[in-house]
Length: 120
Image (cartoon, rainbow, N blue to C red; front, side, top):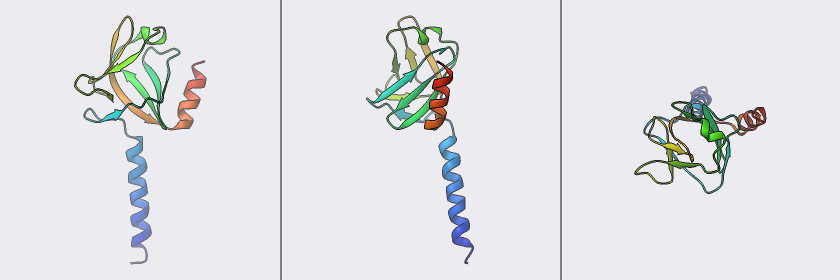
């Protein structure tokens, strides 16, 4: 019985960290915050999103070359205003394109910073 509690704790922590690293499933969406930062330099296949204290790699289904240059960007999810979903449920609208979102992958703040610097 002495070993059961530490083993249970380790199992729960491992499950929680694995869950945090999983990409957003098709039915899962994130609620968009007013406090956002989009990094879109060299954004042909994906953009980096800081949404409040959370960080994501938002991947497109196809090339979205206008994401890097468009003065106006907006995430749009029909029927779910203020949400961002993967599996083609959401789009990134630019002045020239509407780009389907394939996945919204959570990343750490450190990964976000490293990837953002690499795009400069």
